[in-house]
Picture 1 (cartoon, one colour):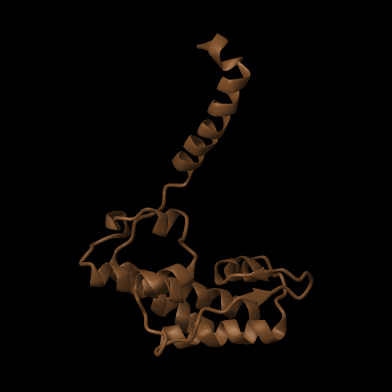
Picture 2: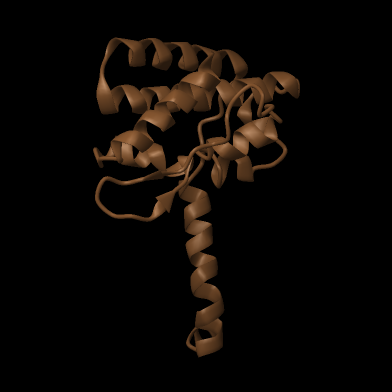
Length: 158
C-alpha cells in the first residue's frame, strides 16, 4: 500500500479523498429538534431587538435560520435535524437561507426575493449565505445593502 501511495496518480486520487474524510469526521453537527430550534429562534430574535448594529444583525440571521429549520422539521414531521433526508441542507447549505426558503416553498407574495449584497470595500456580489460571515467577523457591508438584508430577515421572522 505504501508503494501505491507514492504513485502520482494514487496521490492525486487519495489526497482529496483524505481531505473529504477529515472534513466529514470533524464536521459532525449537533442534532436539534423542533422545540430547540423554536427556542433558539425566540432567544436570538429577542436579543437582536435589544442590541444594535452588527451583533443584532448576526443574531437576527441565526434566529431566521433556526426558525426556517424548525418549520422544515415540523412540516415533515421530523423530530430532529438528524432525520432530514437531504444532508446537504445542513452540511453544505446550513447558512444558505435562500435554499431554505426555496426548500420550504415560501411564496414570493410573503417575502421578497432573497437579496444579494456588497461589502463596503470590495465589489463582488455576495449571496445571503455570506452575510452571517461578514457580520460575525465585523466586515462592513454597504449600508444600503445591509438595510435591505435586515429588512428581508425581519420579513421572514414575522
